[in-house]
Image (tube, rainbow, N blue to C red; front, side, top):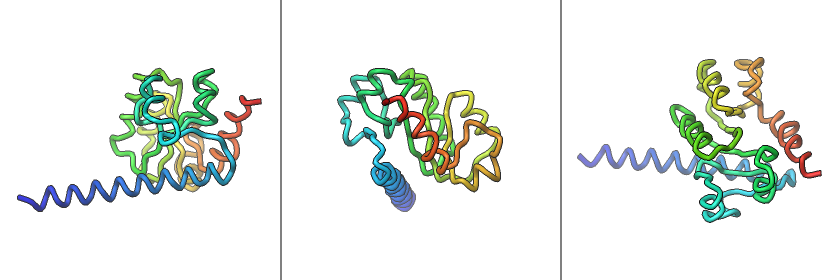
Length: 162
C-alpha cells in the first residue's frame, strides 16, 4: 500500500525539479541578454493577488509597471516542461484574468496540430525548439521557435518602452 504513494511522490518531485530548472534556464537567458523582466520571485505574491494574476504567469516583460500601464504591450510568459492536459490550466487562467494573450514556453515535443489549434483559439502562443517549429509547425503563426522568440518577439514588446 505504500509503494504507489512513494513512487507518485518521487515522480512529482522529479517533475517539480525539472520545471524549476527550466524556469531558471529561461531566466538566465533573459538576464544574459539584459532583457528586463519581473517574475514571481521579484514581484511577490502581493502583486499577483492585487492584479488578479494567477500562479500560471511566470514572467512579465519588461516590467510590472508596464503591465499596469498597458497589459497589451507586455509579454506575459508561462513555462511548462510538458503540456499534456496542463496547457488547459493556462487557457483557464487567461480567461479568468483577462490577459489578452500569453506565451507558453515548453520543451515538450509531443505536440499535435489539434493541440496547436486549440491553443490558437485561446490566444496562446507556443514557444518550442526551433527544430520542432520548422519541421512540424512551419505555417502555424501561434508557434514560435526559441530563436525567433528571443530575437524578434521579445524585442517587439521591448519596443513599446521607447
